[in-house]
Length: 485
Picture 1: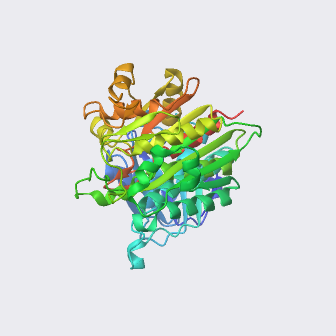
Picture 2 (picture 1 turned 90 degrees about the vertical axis):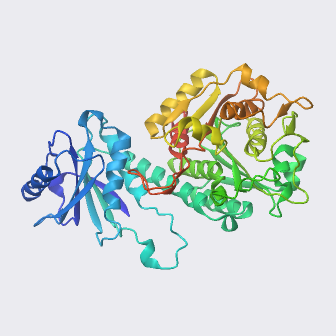
Picture 3 (picture 1 turned 135 degrees about the vertical axis):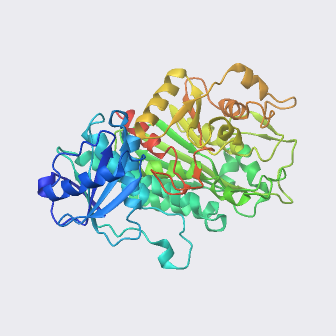
């Protein structure tokens, strides 16, 4: 699939033309006369279209016209531009269209943001979760060869960024969607190696013995009940050379989470195949950084294991020593994500990372607090947290800053060890963040993204199909570009 930009007058022979319909019904400049007449009739029939509702019609020369309700013009923003493009492509899922042209509205957001959002939206709609159905007709997607953005200006860089980010989000979705028997820690490590090879970056995988030598007993405690060997995936991008890393991504990589001895209820346990979404997001993001080549050093760490009950599984009340030297009392084996993350955070700091962003489907409590719309954002100092929030908003991820104070840090103190991994249901997402905070050293800027509410959708959305959503990928890519020298 190729993307290009062109003026409306330069385009001919397009199978589908996509036009946004705003509340004011003012149509884009440059519509061919015959097409404009068709669209005007459609707009009158549609009236005030609901946001992202798609209507199609056949024109005489322009081919098919897809009219997409874009809402109020004054409220138009990149997230709506992505939704506009995705809705149009989803309407073509069962068509034979090979060429499509978008009138990429840029008023209020600029041509570059409009172009990038449109390209991302096309990519987001080109992924479906039914990858293991045996009948090909149930897995149909558009056969698009060329996507043209009808926009006046040089947006080649924006198109490239949109393609890279769009592919990265879909990569994270693909990894998170795989059943646990087809995405074991070893299989995930193989995927990471291939992503690194394609992006021209380094990839190292540490086995159990190497992790033991590093003192990562908190991470390894989660792996005790599984026959699958744990894998610590480390990917390195050196864009400026020199020592250390300007930015570290750490992702929770529980490839299946049964809860361990503290067994989860059977209902919906199958969805715990996606408990490695944080790991999927960070490896996809650093591979995208490798493609874009900003002048920055970035490291991504993904501690991967299964969390299963078994003869060797961690028991509630067991105590382990983390890589940082802090001792951890495991009260609840289903609070395992924080156990792997603290060793990943410590590893990042030992590698010389100045800023650490961790991404994890960490707590059901964040989904209760924020629902499926916002990702929970924690960290310190406040100035860095605000930078992450603002960058995420611009990139297209909605982040909500949550409190993290000493009262919550005190709550995770253990009676017999340094910290405990479970301290009651109230404020559960904050207490989980406070547990991670114990591994953050003085002088490190740190942000924690709890994506447990935003990692999955049970229905198609305007901006993306159902299934895994690839949260935080665009934020991580944007942060790497923001801190580049």
